[in-house]
Length: 332
Ligand code: NAI
Image (tube, rainbow, N blue to C red):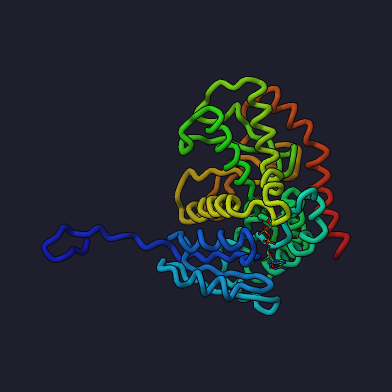
């Protein structure tokens, strides 16, 4: 205990562990607000911001905020190695966003190449870092990353996460609004994948539990699945969800960091390599620990409607997974 003269002893605060977080695609629509939220998070000691261009400006701007997080900017191929050095957590929002009328799969060709290259660099320069994949189509970019890491000999499914937190954030918001619930008390697990009908909010497991009619469940499910499209259309050609996505990514990153620091019972939803279902990659609740995922949690009891949705996503989810795996081997 230390003390101020004449005052009460001040409690000695245990220093937080030194944690380095790297954002790849940090100058973009998601990258910038996400980097700001990370700069405000006391769990982040060092923040490395990487993009093909523009990151020194973003980093200098953020570095003037008086929080403990040290910020560094890196730009271009030559500096990727330094951006990744000693990272504990790498968050990837690099790539192009959806335009109106474009499906997530149409982004595939551009984003697949970007993700492949970035993950190869992660395997080389920070092979033990946790990866939070934001770049779409997540249903394919996570299998791409897994395959790249396998080729490089550093794959561990407990360290690779597709970020689906925005689906959870949306489901919570829409459920709370529909039933007039205090939003901070609401939780809704979202399973499956991260595109269209592969996004499956489990309102049967929502908390607090309030009765929903069949029509309400269907409407809330559709609204959650179409959340991304709603934003793309509202932005009318100027990109996809960035601010809500930055919030969601910051939330999941914080869960990873808390778990890394030894905080118990950290649970979140993410799209991971998993044996919870027959799909090799599947979004479900996951328990996080010091070195990444401790386990993917079983689905638990689901409603008949949810079971039907789960069955109906099969072709789309498997198709996206196969496409990602094939991409890596066809472009070796
Ligand atoms: P944006 O175009 O505003 O930013 C992307 C950034 O990536 C740009 O600054 C660009 O320079 C950078 N970039 C491109 N190639 C790169 C490379 N090789 N290395 C490093 N940086 C590179 O796009 P926005 O809106 O930030 O979206 C980023 C990605 O996130 C898109 O793929 C989008 O579809 C996805 N997304 C994912 C969501 C999710 O829930 N997982 C939700 C919303 C968007």
